[in-house]
Image 1: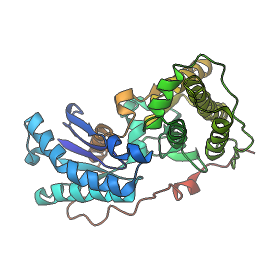
Image 2: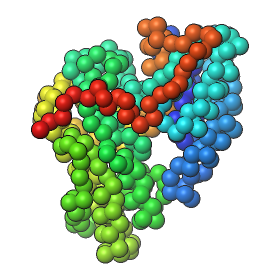
Image 3: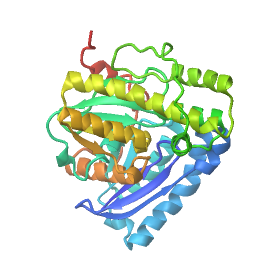
Image 4: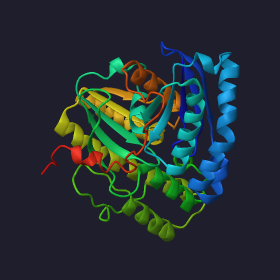
Length: 345
């Protein structure tokens, strides 16, 4: 078996898969109640919560699946990117689990795992593919010529899409996380959408994303309109439309330039119904195969780590005991950016 451990941010998750990829166990422990009062993730709180929860989750995995650590072939763990304290917590526990049994450690790229969650089998990622990872911490576009190698094409130059949802929800007095709250409130809207100025949204290229100016514009709009039971859904729907429209503008440009055969979209924001609908329309219009992450696997989870880790293990990509190195890892993908293809003029 392969056990997967995910602690990149505020979700603690453990999964067990056998060597055919069949799921033996999968649990996600959310920390949303711990961070809700702050309107966002507090790194120190997140890492301490991982310490408290992870041992019991692993014990539960073996108990529920009626297996034992001695049956493991390897331990897969998220190695980054993510919150450093959270990553170190998962890494330390993974080493502690693997070392007594001298099991190999499999360091799994969090971004790649989100894209792997879009398909049942990695064999489905064929031909020329584009991958979008969109979440609270990432809004990145990759070209995938040969899985699992990712070539960064563009990214947000400031904030991620999920962060814009969280900030908007906080301004409107909605619960954390912001994405589901904004979507739920937007469904109640019966008024025309309000325009959000876009002149503050500046990027280095037509492919890059930017949400900082959009957040500021939304805050000013809320001050102007005011929050009432009637305007709150209107404001939520207007923000959701603006975020999705900005993402789709970049997606349309990259698809027109790259002409991919397959489009993979994963990450927490990929669960947004409006975004999924717009992506389906784009894929149909351009003749692409669209692979959206299943909604239960859109958020951070250990099943994507275990599945991707199993494939890396079978390909020989792991760290044997004793573990010489598993860090450093690019926290902001800045070193990956040097591999980008030339920017469009």
